[in-house]
Image (tube, rainbow, N blue to C red):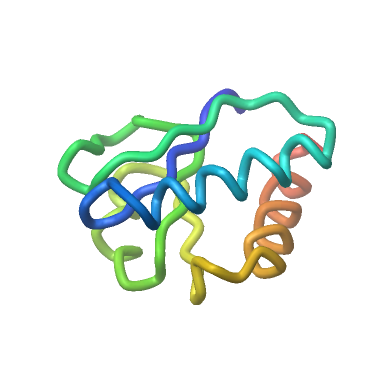
Length: 93
């Protein structure tokens, strides 16, 4: 796994917030992966190994690859729990 992309509707505030939280969690886990943010219109299939988005965008994002929807993008605990579970199932943790 090399890259995670956080996607929101406009590619500004919420995806950037999630990106920063992902970077913090990965650092705490001792992982060095590329993390970016973008808007839905700029994404394409294969843009990343994992896409993280709000649950409202899940149906639009899942066509791009592995997608992790968040019920509450502000909830760092939800993000960490789901990210650790995903990385564990992929054999990265």
